Length: 66
Image (cartoon, rainbow, N blue to C red; front, side):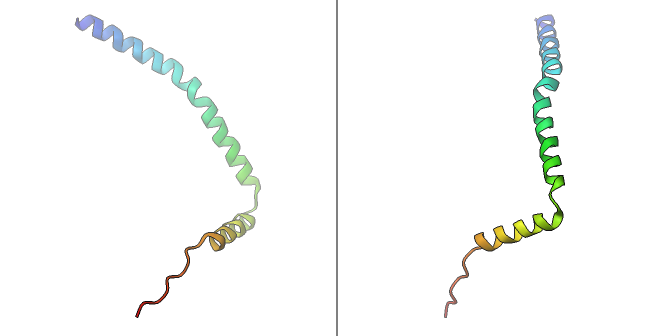
């Protein structure tokens, strides 16, 4: 029984190690592509967009209670 568990763990490890890099590569490439696109936008433009979005979506002021 112990030998069966060891062989199963070895098989699971080899599958995980062999499959994980291929599964993670598209996610890493998408992140790198997004970083390149955001890196091409000047910081002033990003700050302006953030300010516009904040002003459009800020919470409404609460009325004063007496």
